[in-house]
Image (cartoon, rainbow, N blue to C red; front, side, top):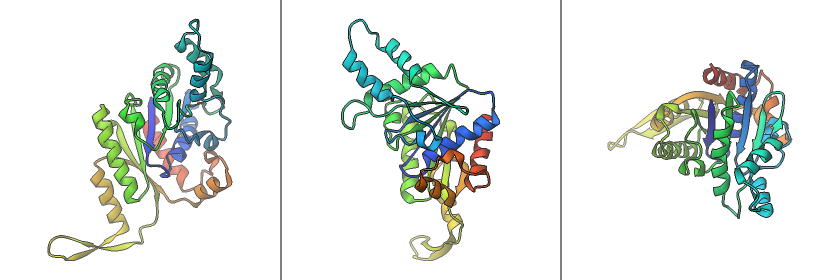
Length: 265
């Protein structure tokens, strides 16, 4: 199963990715799991508490430098990916890194498609933490995923991004029933807001929960997980502590565990 996690920057994709690795590993102790950091910001290794080896971007650059007519690129790539896969008790790990040239991830996106095709044969679960941008979808890099988790926080910008991601994913050929919404950083519904109900300029009082539920409904993406705002996540991020080690009594862990149970069966 290939699980792709995407969404606007800062909404918690990497937290979801790292804890999914942990929770699926706990649920399926004998299953082989591969975690792929496809975000050029490369934060997943830190969240998993591991050291990344040479990234795919670096491997491509080295091939370009070492290239000769006697070297087959795909053979070279297979060998170097094998040599630079980090092995841990819970999962294996590959870092995609940046592509060739400033701001260009074209080659890395092409190779990510190759990696997914190659590795899904050897792993029960492949978890891909994607970049905040939509490059992977517009280039149809991750459209072969079994599950597309679209992560948002409660902000308007987060929900707009989620809707945009869905539109691009559908256009790229992703089945709508494989897309799910994960809403992160949900605070207690104490907010009360007056909203305009129409042309008569009348106002109605709505709670924060009602407003959030409307935002979710407007995306037309099936909500699969709602994660409370968790101070422990903030503390772990600020201190550089791996998110994968967050306590099981935190607000976040039980929700990701439920998500893992749904996905892993």
